Length: 208
Image (cartoon, rainbow, N blue to C red; front, side):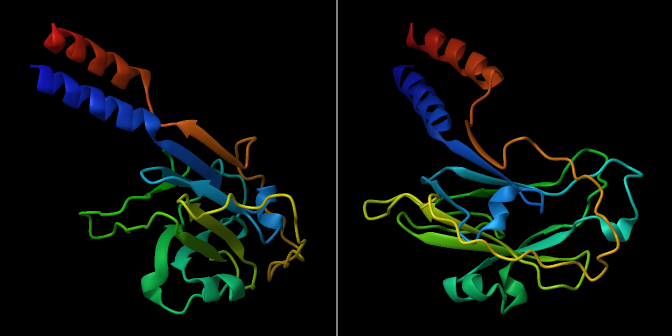
């Protein structure tokens, strides 16, 4: 019984300690206006990418934002040019989804049993870029993720290098207002009250 209680407690502590870092992947996120959009995560943290989403009837289908996201090496990050289809990570191609915005989650873990899962290293730096599906321009959005380790430094957010906004192939069309959160990037504890209420009574009962 005591071992079971310790096991439940260990799982609860592990869940509470994980952070979820949310990135709203659309052109209205001002963090993408500079080339140094970077976040720091720890092992077992989550990156949650929120795709562009629109209310039905907000505008013609070809005017809304759609993106293909890639997980690339540093060289492709600097040029914003993926070199292989194998680098495709996600596709934000359902801007009118009835259930709400598409969400993709990356867990920064050392090992994974899933075919589509990725493995990450403590102290490593990883790079995400996107190419627009809604037009054929060269606009690029980039994100650098640093997995905290003994030798890592927090991402620099004080110095910004502005970059020109590349126009769509159809500049006369205005993109409808994409639904977005007030925060361009946020971190919240990955724990729910329902999980807490489920685990704690079980722990108490088995420790008595």
